[in-house]
Image 1 (cartoon, rainbow, N blue to C red):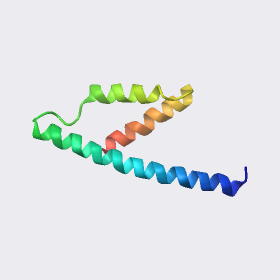
Image 2: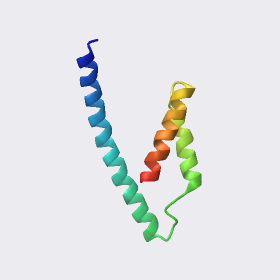
Image 3: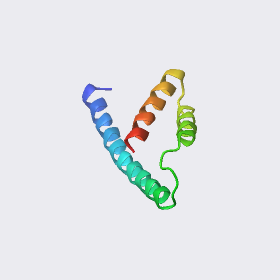
Image 4: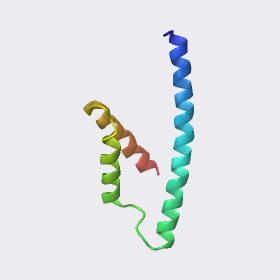
Length: 79
C-alpha cells in the first residue's frame, strides 16, 4: 500500500471518529441533564469503571486494551 493511500484511509477514519465523538458527547449531555433533573449524581464512578472494563475487553491484545481504556477514560473526563 502506498503512503498516500494509507494517509487517505486515516483521514476517513479520523472523520468518522470526529463524527462519532460529537454524537457521543451529545448523548452524554443528555444523560447528564436527565440525571440532574432527577436529582441523581451526574458522575458514577462504578458505572465508569464498568464501562472502561467493557471497552477494554473489546481490544484484541493487552497493549491495545490499556490504550483503549486510557482513551475512553479521557473521553469520559471530557464528557
